[in-house]
Length: 93
Image 1: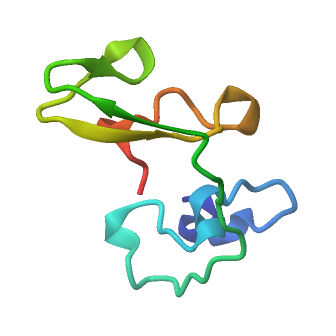
Image 2: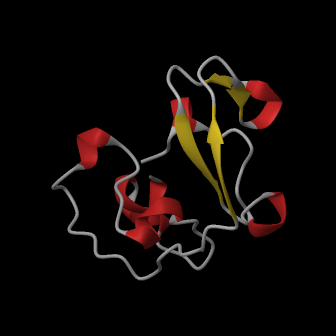
């Protein structure tokens, strides 16, 4: 956000974050800057399973499945830079 909001901050120590993926850091910045992705996030499904309604999944069992669902596990985690706080209810995009 500082990259876009503070024009005097154009040094060599800025963290553009999601802007590298073409995403605006805040909704009120949509259209203010024309972003194009320079990076992409790709992975492959490592495990696929059926989960019954009422079962819990995710870190610390924070999501309860409301209907029978097929769940895909992706080989992405802490070591890949994926923050544990970025769960379904807190998507950064």
